[in-house]
Length: 444
Image 1 (cartoon, rainbow, N blue to C red):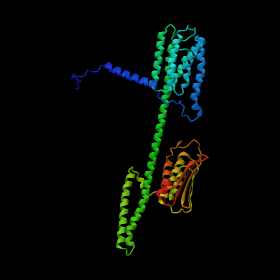
Image 2: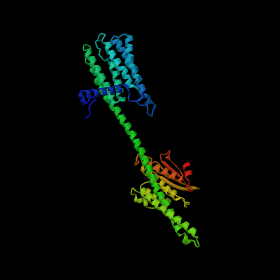
Image 3: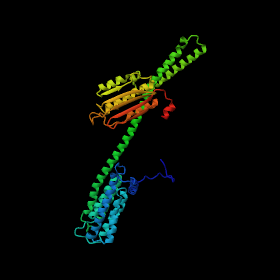
Image 4: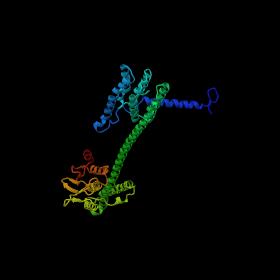
């Protein structure tokens, strides 16, 4: 138990002090909200793609100003009998800030709100007209409702509630201070204002929720694309392991059998071949450990030999059985193709046909594989879907193209994809038939 400097125990703080502290804190927060807009000074449709929509808020506020300035001036002078100079000053203070509603509605409220209260006090000094409404003349009432709606569309919920509460308090005080002039219409402004502010707040919060959802979808899409990229790279790494492991096994066998195949081999050469075989076996062991990590998801099916161009015919036939009319064009004899290029070409054709089945069911598709000098060209072109609007997937994520680009980048080739003028789609890959150094691959 702590004690005060005098040695006496501290006195418990009264509950009233805690309530006063909370009240002061809330008042400070409300005052901050009312003096600091929660949005940047830009119109609501500043991000709209079309120019006429971006200009719409300015057109609306200029129309409001053009309507309410002459109407308010006419009502104050002709119906309430105010002098033209005084009526003009009140009209400007009560209606000119409408031009600020597009980008600064809270600041406009700070001008119009005291101007309307001042106008009600000024009207007390003039005789009550037969059809007069006090404290809020009709133009003033309608103009203020537009201000409350604009505030509700742009500001936070606490600011909106504070604006309405101050409006209700002002209406009540004026009603009590001029009971002989008030005919009960002072309650119209808080009542109508509450309805409009609720509508505006609902619209604003719905728009905020849609923006947050769009942002989350964008983030999710980026994460999904990154995950697809990593999965495809892991798949390529597994396939490359199979390719490299084959060559390493050949090196091991040749190094081990060299002393038996070559007669009169010097002892130093025998030791060199033994060291080569040992290094190759050690590399195979390390690669198997790596493969265990890459295949930790249990994809046992990927332990099968990797497919290549010799299986493209089977792939196209399976696609035809799936309902996609596909044609294959292959040269009579393909040149020697590096295994990495062989696997990449097969996977590119596989992904392109899968995309055609998903996005253009029934479309005629042509697969062409040609060899031109030092490059292998893979071309997959599909026509427009036979049934417009009937794709199995109406929107594509483009994740299949991610794998194609990774494979082409791996071999140092080029990839060209995109829609055709007739509504079809084209995938064209150009893969080198000679090994590409890492520096050349990065430069390309």
